[in-house]
Length: 241
Picture (cartoon, rainbow, N blue to C red):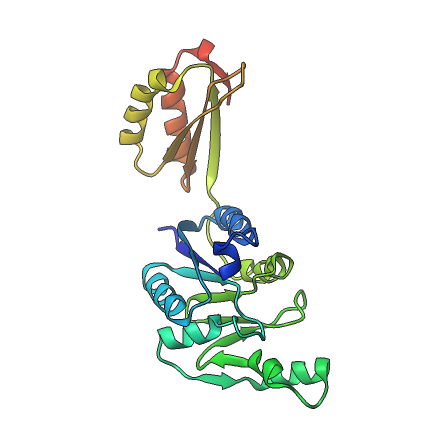
């Protein structure tokens, strides 16, 4: 059975429209490549209680949880506190992070800099040569930065931990309108339970009017569903596969 995931985007700046969320868009595509089924994306404010509630809920429901944002040194960076509260654990200063901060900022660290070294008790750090600062993982929660460039690098490290079977995909482009195709699609959908079928109308294209996608982890089922669908639709209506 495919693993599931939830994404929590954290930040008042996203909810207010001051900053555009690029991180969930990136993660959606990456998770799909690894056959991890994304079930929900949530955007929450910089509020400890709201973060705690959402993180706890997602952690119980999904195999993987990815948070983005709120892990810096400023007053509104409260993601770590929210996660600690969600699981009723203390925040502790991590020696490895402190050592890194000393190397970067010098012997005397400010309270704001020390805040970066606080992690929920029981959290693990994942280091990799591709990232300068270790990534934090607590239970099934991967705690990522809000800056897209940093998130992309750290997500590349996470991907090395995935061992999911890739999803197989087929596309069919049809010069027919969706209402005419729907009866055939419904039959195929009911017949092949392990094949996910999507129908997407295309506007403004003279060559084809609908794109059908078929996805499955099982190649045999996928090909059977595809062949069944192609037999039900007139050949002259099928533009390409």
